[in-house]
Length: 206
Image (cartoon, rainbow, N blue to C red; front, side):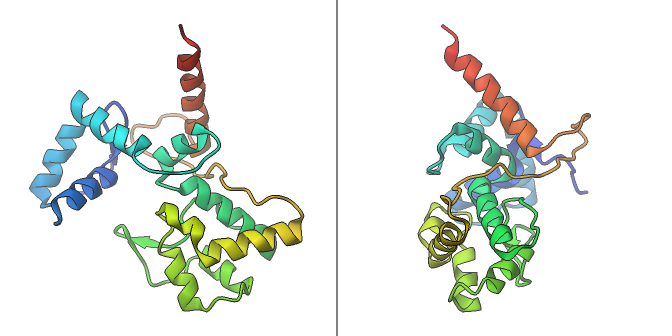
């Protein structure tokens, strides 16, 4: 049966993240029995802290504030940077885009061949890249190195030139959250700002 609870334990770690971490370490896909065992592990203190710490701190981001890392914890690696990419594409193209931090469409965790609204918007900007080159760059959206791609460079240059202001590197993803565990209205932004307030209180504590 499909389990609708996708974040587990004291640090609310994404099971998809934990699965990906273990599969990368083992070099093979996990069986269903191994996935259920991993779910149980995430409910322990050791498992929650282990995978939660990796999820929060185990990547290079280049953000100016931990606020965006907290948003990524909820929305996925580099979602804050990618939301800024969506914002730039939307402003340059004069079309509204969902700032969800996903530049591609995903099916079962894998990029779909179908072009996303963001990919279509980038194509319409005529940045001087072929559709094939654009897609190759977008496939790097979950990596730090995406910021070094031609797509990112040309988009940022176009934004700075036409808008007359510095391109934003990160923005809070605008995602409404729904889960059997959520009772009140919750978004990625609300989550990130709440964690940031707690982080600041902890840093000030003597």
